[in-house]
Each structure stands twice: as structure tokens, then as C-alpha cells.
Length: 285
Image 1 (cartoon, rainbow, N blue to C red):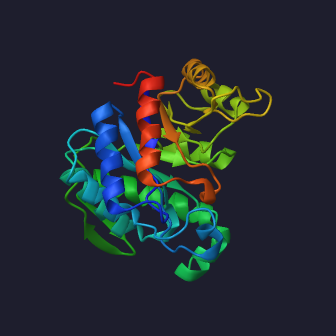
Image 2: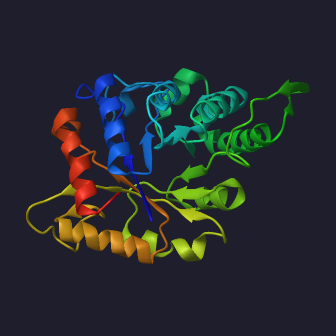
């Protein structure tokens, strides 16, 4: 099982210095992956959960790639319909090239309607648009040219990774699972409950990976076992959660230190201690 960290690339408590320190520390500690979040148009509905300043995802990944050596970098997840698929294919292939094949690309359908309005994207067609984007990406990543709207488009450079960067599909519902089984590499549900995780082996096609994102919010006293989410509780409870996920077939586990209520978010220097504690608790590296 591999472990990753969800890097909060947003909020007044985070700075470029903080993002770089988080990523380098995750690399030093032996984490496999660092993922950033995505809101291209940060409207009020999303701002309440992920406040400004919000550093653009692909630019941030490219910058981090140039200042790290081994850690895999990715998005968990990009909103697929918010960028033109040809531009998205070019940007992601370039990042994979520049990073030496360290990119992980996650995609989801999005949930904030106002951002769709701002970008001129039909919120009610976001599922179909996501499917279209994924199809174009896979074709562009694996071919030297694609035909788009009747024109031939040259797509080189191709990604370093063969046949393409790992394609993680976000979402906890049946449509997300359909996408994973059709074109994805891994299923990347957000804060799934135990019941959903226990079904991973039966709902994922052969060869598909399970890469849940869970909390890492340690407590000093035991949390109520009847209501606590995965990753919330004492170190022993969290270790038991990881054992449960291993038994459920998880290939990767992404740890999320986001408390949900941004008023509880600490300065990045304090929050960085959670990353170190996670590595110690889970014996990473």
C-alpha cells in the first residue's frame, strides 16, 4: 500500500513557501504522492469550503515538479469540463514530461453550479462533458495526432508514462465507478465510509486500483466508533482504519488534514506537523 498527502493549495493559512515545504517534506518522509485541489473559477459556493487565495492546480504542479525529485504529483481532482480537452491534454503531457513521469491525473465532474455559469459550461451536462474530456485525453496521450472538430491536431510530446499517466476518477457514486471501469486507472472516492470501501473489490473491474482519500485528524481520546469517519480518532484507531483499507484492497491511501471548517485550519507550519505525525504513526518510509 502506498500513501499520499492532500496538499491544501488554498486558504489564507497557505503560501507558496508552505506548499513547497509540505511537498518536499512529504518526499523526504517517504510519501508516494502529493495531490492538489482544483477550482478554476472560485465562486462563492466553493469559496466557503476552499477559500482564496486558491493557487491554480496545473501551474502549481508544474512548479512543484521542478523543485522535487521523486514524489509523484497530481490533482485530486481536476474538474474535467472546466478546461478545453486539447489544452488539458497538452498541459498534462507536458507536466509528465518535465517531471520525468511523475504525474497522477485525477478527474471529477464538479459540484459548484456557479463556477459552471462563470465558465459558460452547462452544469446539467457535466457528466457527459467529463466522459468526452476523458476520451479525448486518452486518445491525445496515446497518439501523435488526433482529429478534433474536423481538424488534425498534433499532440506531441506524449507523456513519459506508458500508456499514459495514472488516471484517477473521483466521485463516490455509480457513474464514477462506470468511468473507472471504462477508462480509469484507479477509483479515488472522497472520504468514503466503511460500507462503500468494503464494496470496492466487487464493484471495480479486474486491474483497477482503489485509492481512497480519507481524513488524517488524530485525537488524544478515542472517537465514537459508531460515527467516526475513517482517519479520525486516536493513532490506534487510525492504524485500524488503514488495516481495514488494506483488507478492502486499497492500493493507495491519500491522507487529508482538512478539518472541513476552515476556521479550524491552522497555519501551514503547524499543520505540517500533522504530516510528520502521519509518517510516524503509519510507519511510512
